[in-house]
Length: 65
Image (cartoon, rainbow, N blue to C red; front, side):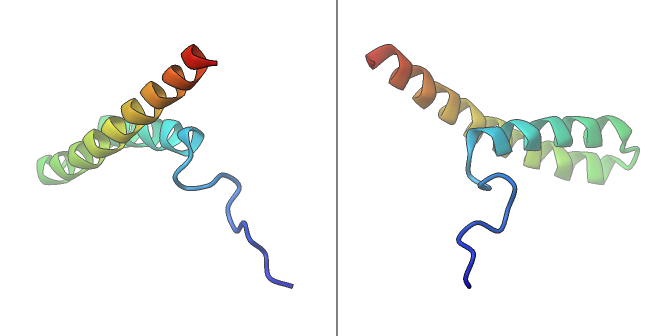
């Protein structure tokens, strides 16, 4: 039988983005290579931007209900 959910959390959920941002923050703190730090910072910025949009959408949904 085909499973519709293969992940513990849907990858595009707000919870997944919260975890992703935390992971990238921790990874950035541990990394010592400047080039890798720059790459991680870009990933962090992208994840944080998406998370901010999702949080704003969730806030608007709560305010309108």
